[in-house]
Amino acid sequence: MGAIEFNDQRLTPGKIVCIGKNYVAHIEEMGSPIPDDMVVFIKPTSAIGDNLVAYRDETIHFEGEICLLMGEHGVAGVGFGLDLTKRATQAKLKAAGLPWERAKAFDGAALFSPFVTAPADLQTLRLELYIDERIQQQGGSNLMMYPPATILTELAKFIRLEPGDIVMTGTPAGVGAVQAGQRFVGKVFSGERELISAEWLAR
Image 1 (cartoon, one colour):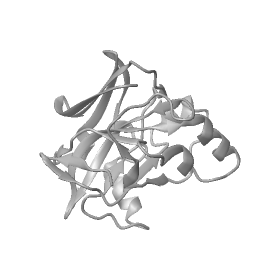
Image 2: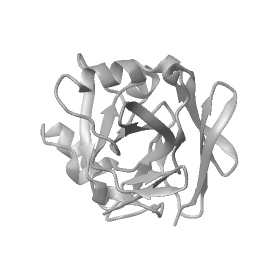
Image 3: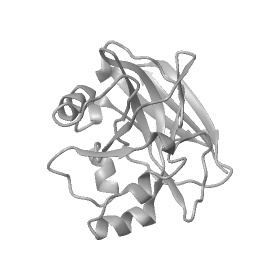
């Protein structure tokens, strides 16, 4: 089972709950309609990996996300995550009206920075993703269709979040294909204060 790090301790999440199509600019870049309801899908903990791969049966695409780590009394930690996607497979599945697991839940499809204690105001959260020192993605709670508080309220209507669960809050515009040799640096901020960062070398 995949493990993550929270304040220098290792733990294994129970589940990874992902929010799709949460930034209007990303929906537009994908040529998709704005959904009527919040889009939710699940990644298993076996999807947690350490290595950023550019190819696994097909080209892999990246999506940088702010991630929330649940505690006993709500959100305990925050981190940066990469939601890795087999885009060609996803397109075929979507066209056929089928679930996305083959495109989103494969081994190594979720990469995470260490998690640190969450700020009191989740609305201040924002992310930056750099590829080879050039900014590729940026966004935050203020640009989300469903900001963190709303995500948690909506999820509570049908799924119980437990301590150790991770919520991936969606990706802003700027997604694309991973190229071998690229250096990815993901950062999460509270306002202008950097909370955590992580680096991966694509291979």
